[in-house]
Image 1 (cartoon, one colour):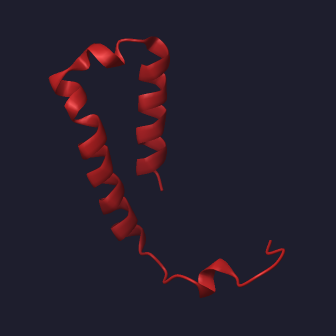
Image 2 (cartoon, helix red, strand yellow):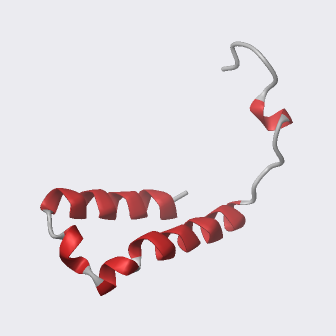
Length: 61
């Protein structure tokens, strides 16, 4: 629903799903790969759940 202003699709070009997925995979590699080198900061159960859910949500788009 647009309340005021230009519709967003008129402001930016469409993004192909393959381009979006490739970008998300790049971000996941950049942000989460360091965890393999220093896993101490992901020892909390809450953070592990957050990390897994975030990666799954990103990759399912």
